[in-house]
Image (cartoon, rainbow, N blue to C red; front, side, top):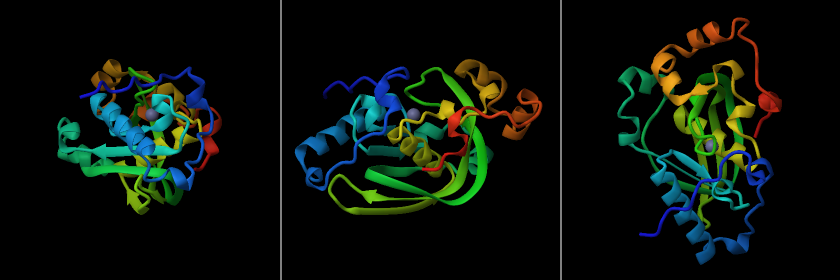
Length: 211
Ligand code: ZN
């Protein structure tokens, strides 16, 4: 087993620029297969539910995502249902194009492997569609809601140099241990009401952004 590549942390410019399209001739190559394998190793070692190539310092439009039963074992059945969190198999998408199917906002705590140790409430669209191909050039067309839709929006943002901190409800930003102890079990609307007295303060320039 090779050692998983280190995850690039915020502050590195690769996380702040638009990643390059993968040319068609790179599909099915060993180079791309190796990149995907490294990304999967880094994601599973973290552990995380998604990773974009810039997060291991590679300027390419490639994302991987996977959610497993063991990663959601601490959530109650109610919390799982509220988040629409369901296991799904490992999926790799090259040159993903994300469109919002239903923009109705869903707000939950979200974190990022490149911003370790912190979480914040982030509004995401409830349902999205992602098209692209696998690393083997198989077409992908995925219409999905709930937690996988949140992961896809988070990972596709990475390819455009956007981090969740650009979209978060800034006053809900907190250290993992504090958020988990005080806020994570609470209804997000209540957290928002308690921390955002006017309920309206948004973070930076990503507030209006689409995919
Ligand atoms: Zn991230």
